[in-house]
Length: 80
Image 1 (cartoon, rainbow, N blue to C red):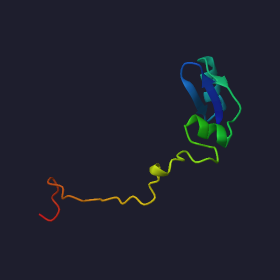
Image 2: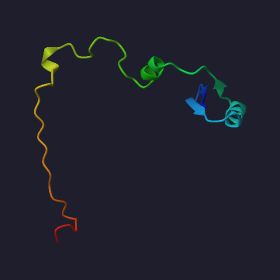
Image 3: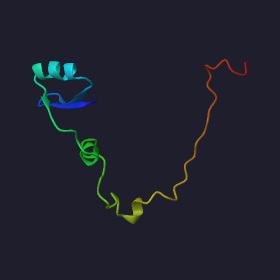
Image 4: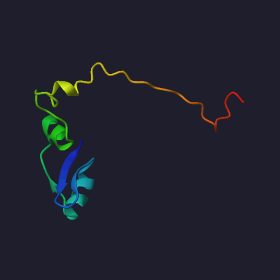
């Protein structure tokens, strides 16, 4: 069971037990209803709309090639 709490200074948190929630309430936290998935995504800064973020065709990165190179670690004892 998770109990969701907010505080105007510290933001949001959750408690895992009734005892923990009661202790938090003594320290200024207030219980709030469980947030929906959309509310959580918005708080985390995710785009929840159906519209794409970048509509400029020059920003399309689907054809971008990524080059990855692996260098030997000079501090490794492997292959010594």
